[in-house]
Amino acid sequence: MSTISVPVFTRRLREVVADEPKAFAYDLGLSLSAVYNYLNGRVPATEVLFRIARYSGRPMEWFLSEPEETASAVGGLGEAAEPTSYAAAASESGGT
Image (cartoon, rainbow, N blue to C red):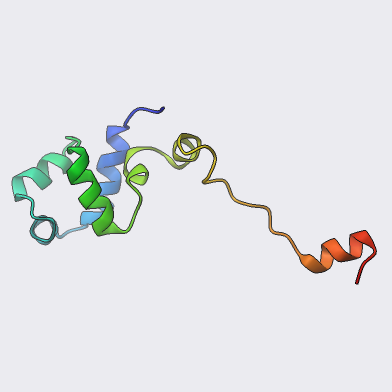
């Protein structure tokens, strides 16, 4: 299991909050000082992180680690699948 990357969390939270920390705090039922604490490197409790993730439409893992770390943390589920073509598969096997 990977550890939490505070710089990644802070950077990604800044993307979500943008320049509206007051509205963000209000929408999530947080104090403005709590939001500023999170923007300055404090990692919230799991419950608050869940609310932030739900609000942003992103998975919790997105806030906690880089993409390659996230993919390995969930067993490779984040890896891109190879595109397949039925027509190409049929022509290779001699079918129509």
